[in-house]
Length: 169
Image (cartoon, rainbow, N blue to C red; front, side, top):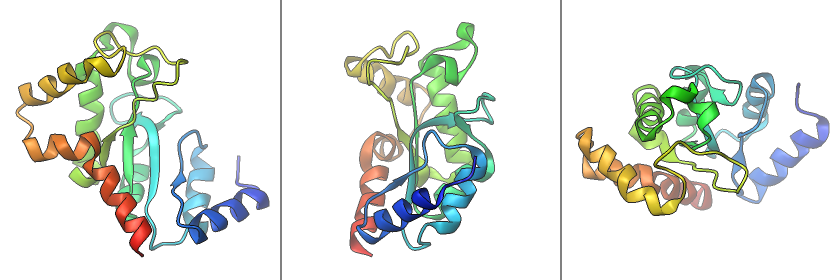
């Protein structure tokens, strides 16, 4: 469950080439080792995950992990895989927002993003079965009285900011 020598070498090459190190799908021990190997002046991302503070699942990040990604200037994207977000009866657009809100509360507004993972292999909550439902997602954010600038950040500006930092440093 640790990173192999090849994995460490890959992180070093990604850092050297200024390519994001994406810590999605990684075991918790390997997550921390990857951060040790990763250059401290570059953001890391977790493209599609959730917050274990909302739902305990091996694919969800702990609060410490969220903070660690945030401290690099990185972004945590919330996926739309219903079974990773919460119990079946609770799967909804609202549950996605709960995960985003938790990430904001733990890591800051700059750390939250959408990480839908629409690859054909996920089962999203009802109301998020494709990008055509994004207007409803945004409406749900507005219904929670989220500021327009926060919504823009979550929908893409946070990722673009992390990318800009990665490319400029």
